[in-house]
Image 1: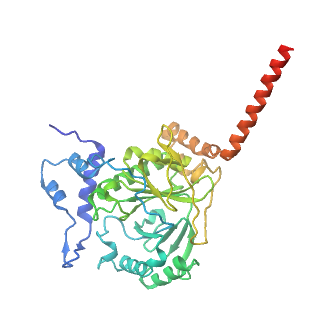
Image 2: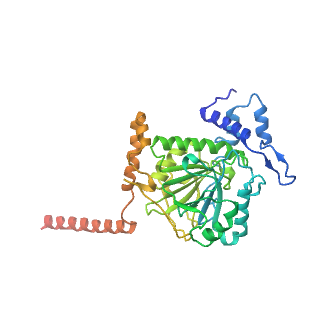
Image 3: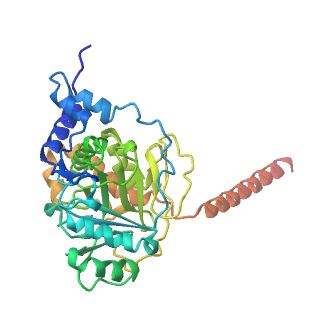
Length: 389
């Protein structure tokens, strides 16, 4: 039976090919000799003239049989703080960044974390790509939920960073501190660790950036590839750090994410604060049950305070909506006048989201409803009395 190629599948195949062409050699645990990143399956597929993008997608991409086979809720262990270390890009990452002889910087960070793991049991450390065009360089450290960025981490000052910042809760004397703003999305694209993330991750990143550009939100939402976060079988794996109605930063994990889910992540989760329940794996902070959502399969976020580092920066903008989604005019919006109708609709939605958060607590609404009901009952009784009299 002939296989129909789609743009998405072709893109996935080319990305897999590019990944395995550019990835640096890694070292096995046993003999420490360089070996290729190509798995037997992908190698045979690449050499097979009849192989298609659909073959890759069916085995490792968004149409693989394991998709949606497991309940995702609860597949993330409870933790309070997430630290991302910027280093190179997902094409260059070896399978084991924490043990690579060719990457002494990440190996040093992993060693420092391991030595203090008992005291940092509620902290996760993950590598993310450095992107100069987005303001993220090698050695930058991003800390959530504190929304802090430190610059110039390297092998020589790793211990002082861990002791002063992560353990001591103090500003880092050896680094330059900046505040992070807006929302931040991390997508696992660590293909050398698991081919499923190597296939799904880059496609999701491209789709996210495309939809963000369409909405004129490039200055308010960042997207970065990240290394292994656990649960390869749930690829595409996405973590979204954004604020709720109380402006507290939360990190929500999603699995089985496909390009078709990207608009919902932007329009429901980030713009409205609604969790996409069918894809939700868990969140940063104490374990929380997610109640049944409405017909859209989404529920409101449960916001949890973090008791870790004391510094916190969360800067809003003009005409600020939920989670940093602003309806201010931007240069990106001006560039998109060719699609003015579509972009304008999303822009209007971002502006209106600040009005959708209820100002009253649920008990206040119930009390008010009870009072109104009592008033209505009195009015009916009085009318009946007048008629009978």
